[in-house]
Amino acid sequence: MTLYRTSRGLTYALVGVVVLLLASVAIGAVILKRHGYSLADYLPGTVPLQVSPYVQNVTRNSASILWDTTSQSDTRVNYGTTSHLGNTASGEPKRRHEVKLFGLKEDTLYYYRVEDDGPLDDIHSFRTAPGAEATVTFAALGDSGNASKAQYQMAAIVAKSHPQLVLHLGDVVYETGAERQYDSRFYLPYKGLLSSIPFYPSLGNHDVRTNDGQPYLNAFDLPTNNPHQTERYYSFDYGPVHFVALDSELYAGDHSLSTQAQKTWLKKDLDQRQRPWTIVFLHRPPFSSSLGPHPGGDTRIRQDLVPIFERANVDLVLTGHQHNYERLEPINGVNYIVSGGGGADLYPIEPGERSAYAVSRLNVLELKASPHELKVDAVGEDGAVFDSVRLTQ
Image (cartoon, rainbow, N blue to C red; front, side, top):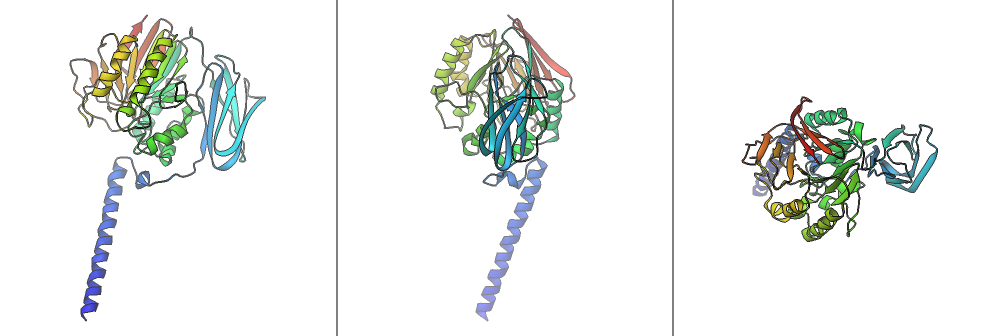
């Protein structure tokens, strides 16, 4: 009888534990869903995705075409300057496909279609980069990737501006930067842009949470013009602008490389640039008036990188991380804009002594650069410009 009672008591206890665990999971799922996440975001491993073709790393004479299939298949791209195509480039059969197109003409519209073992894809197009004398338009946004209504809203605003390229200021994919999250939080929200417009991202703190950002590195084909041949930081020219993407997470959680290696490369890169304008973009801002979870700017970046920006006369530094908008008055000749309103929940902000304009609202940046002028418009969720700055040479 005693043994029976003990066994029954243990059974009730185990049932109680299971009920509590299930209740905790259910409550956790509700909370995550309320904030745009799901339990699947925190599961390990990856899932094969069917990803439509998208263009990357577009230069004056080359481009990369990427797409994913759910299983290993042929890798081939037909392309040309008309919809009749006429040229073919191919690679090894694989699931994650990447084909580089070389020998392209400057500032020219190209059409392309991918081939694998499945049905033929649609014909897409992209334009190669123009030379230094051209006028170019581009967009920038940060802290977007949570599949929210706001992310889709801001993605539509970017599309309406018809940019030639898009800079992403980090936190491309919430919550952990896992491969399984890219489908709903990057590929789908920007589907209307990716096949024709190259995205150039910088690593954010959420992007490096899975395997030091390896899913991010797998998703993009970026320049590797540094001694380590890494895509974590890089530079490229497009029209009259020299762009520099930096890895701010080397100061906070990304231990893959040293901050000193990036600094040494940055100094050399800025010394060798040959374009009228220089724009640096990274995730964590050196200056900020934000009152959110990350108040103020990043002290180490301010101490380590800002002197390099000032010595090299960098024109504009774009950052995210703070989920709001702030344009600062020029600091020792350098302009700083925080644009972290790409779709994630917003943070409060109070204008500080250095603020020229500060507001907690969704935003993307629309930029236009000619050899003699650089114009930046901050656009809100209503599609209207709420702040602008114009720089001249």
